[in-house]
Image (tube, rainbow, N blue to C red; front, top):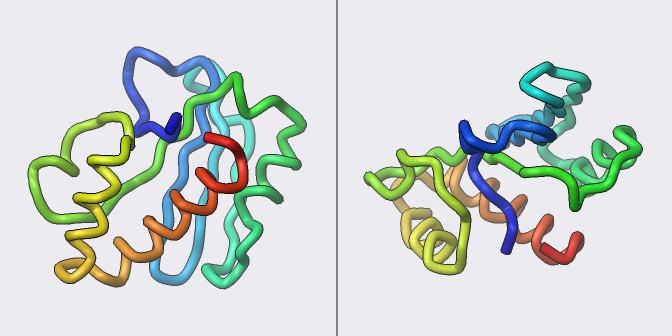
Length: 116
């Protein structure tokens, strides 16, 4: 899976994703400069697709960063969201269900619909 937390070393083209309890926010950066941003209601299931289409650029050229609100040291550091990370995130749902569940749904949506 290629979904990653933003790394300081790879900042050419980045989509930053922030899933809150009421909305989803997306921002697109090139070379560290914000080029576009959008906000959607949390109920909008196709928000990532809509945002991506508005950019008119290829997803394969980008890094995705997603803000994760979850307890534990594993979730503090920037790192790739691999299967182990996702499993630990699922396990933490009981401690921070409001944000964690929505974040997992967004990661799964992107992973399943964009071949990541």
